[in-house]
Amino acid sequence: MNPTKSITERVFQAIGFEVMALSICTPLLAWIMDKPALEMGMVTLAISLMALSWNIIFNSLFDRLKARLQLANGGWTRVLHALLFEGGLVIGCVPLIAWWLNISLLQAFILDIGVLLFFLPYTYVYHWGYDVLREKLMQRRALTV
Image 1 (cartoon, helix red, strand yellow):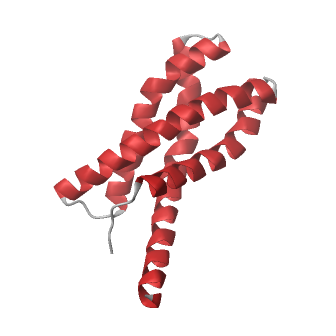
Image 2 (cartoon, one colour):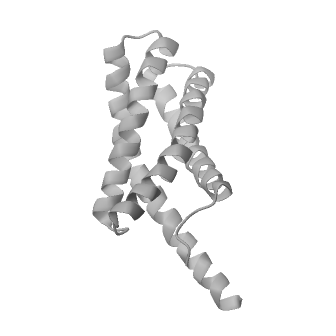
Image 3 (tube, one colour):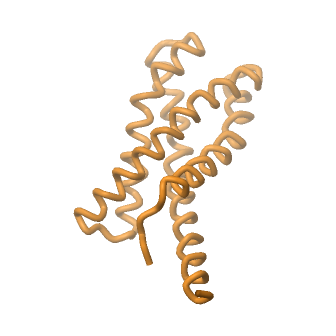
């Protein structure tokens, strides 16, 4: 099996990640922040587009690092993946959140930490599930060829 994913597959994986995240986060954040769903939807969409770009870039780089360091696809590698991915996203998103919602950087950081508490396990579970399903599909294709 070829563990390297094509750019098309990377895009598909990232879009799936973001669509699920938007579906969960927009109504939840609108309720928590007591903001209109449309406003929070725009914020989450902007962050989603940033995250989508970061997802494609980061996962490609992480796969190379994983291969170079010969890291197994075990639990600790997945934890490292989730922490590094979300850490990079925090650096990019906090200023955007502060500006868009007209709040301080500290308030945006606190809000982002709350969102991060959701996204750390979500990132872990989504990518693990994706890889498990991908491996099963690749095995099925190999049997039919």
